[in-house]
Image (cartoon, rainbow, N blue to C red):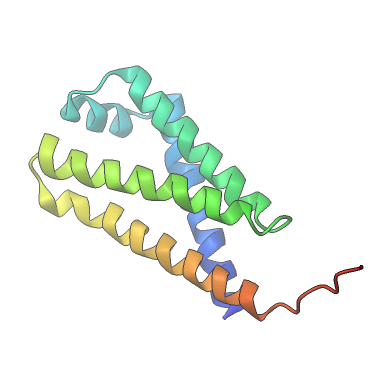
Length: 127
């Protein structure tokens, strides 16, 4: 279970590194997408910065397991926003499928993370 959770965590890091950096540097497809939503360029950059913050939290999760939940929470917010934008602003429910899949992937990773954390032995408390 820990290996599968780690694979999901690394996959999310890779996905959000690519898309976050693409938004920040202004890749043409990202610019076109945000223009189609009618959103300003600063919002695209902000979204990219939040995505990079999420991957940093997920990556730091290998050192401090609690930060995985911070990264997951950021990704949940991003995917809910992306789903809303595709369905409501763009009017294309088909384009909302990838964010929904990423939401499910993140939820599974966070759930597996909590299951792995429960299996760790409790540290002895000094009195």
